[in-house]
Image (tube, rainbow, N blue to C red; front, top):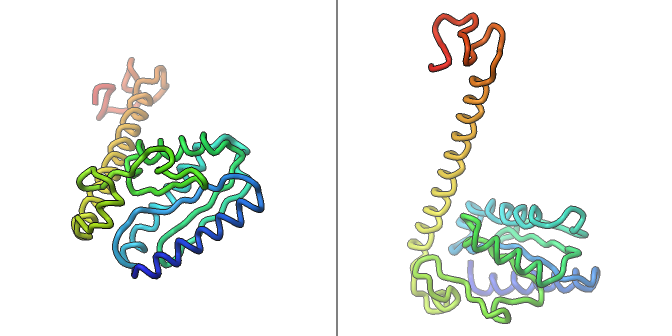
Length: 201
């Protein structure tokens, strides 16, 4: 996207946050994504925004959300949450998600009135670990290199999910086989009606 379009989108997002602050007299959580490139890249990875949005919602206590909205825009997905929580606590949740979730480096979760600069934090660059804003301003890394790193993060995340799912299935099957007694079925003590399998197979 062109710089002017990105700037316009940020201004519009700021107006939405301002309206929500006035309407609810609470801090507003805004959720977007850190994906470089044009509109095609943003569309391909827009699901990451919903993932971040739902992850933040999941971390909030039951009944803490008093307003929420999520939408797709030309500059990517964006979500807004108004919560009963204290801004400082909400900021801790946001930073924790960004730092601990496997795809957290692609999340951009802000709490109105609580910028990273105020809290002494700087977002690390995906490639070199330096100040991400400085790298962006100087154009230190190509979009191709950044997208390659993003795809690697996503691939590793997918692999971990598949591995966990496979492990859960194996554990469930083992528990089912170990359950004893099971009349007519394979258990620890007998093969039931089966002639082609036993507890060991």
